[in-house]
Length: 154
Image: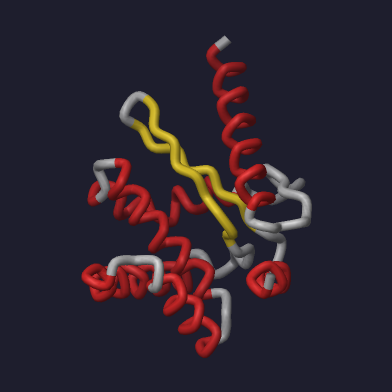
C-alpha cells in the first residue's frame, strides 16, 4: 500500500508541474520520465546533494534549487548566451542577494561541467514539496537545448 501511495504522490507532482509549465506557454508534451532516460528530478537531487545541509528550510531549499537550475541551464549554452540567461535570472532576485547568488551559481556551473556533463537536457521549471521533514523537487525538462531556445523566445 505504501508503494502505491508513493506512486500516487509522484503522479500528482508530475501532473502539477505539467500544468504549471503549460500555463507558462509551453506547447510540447511534458513527460515524467522519458523512455530509457534518467528522471531529471533524480539528477537534480544528486546535483544539489553536497549542499543540501546548507538548506534546512523550504525557502532555503527553493533558493538552492533555483540557483542550481540557473547554473544547470547556463552551463548548457555558449558563454555569451550563458551570461544573458544568468543576468535575466538575477533580475528576479533581490539585488542584495546578487553577489552571493552569483557565487553559488558559479560553484554549480563548475560542478555541472565536472560531474554532470553527459546530461544535456535543460530544466524549464520545478516545484518543491515538503512532507515529513523531507523536500521533494519535481522537475520539468526538455529533450534538448534547441527546445529551450524556442520556449525562451515566446
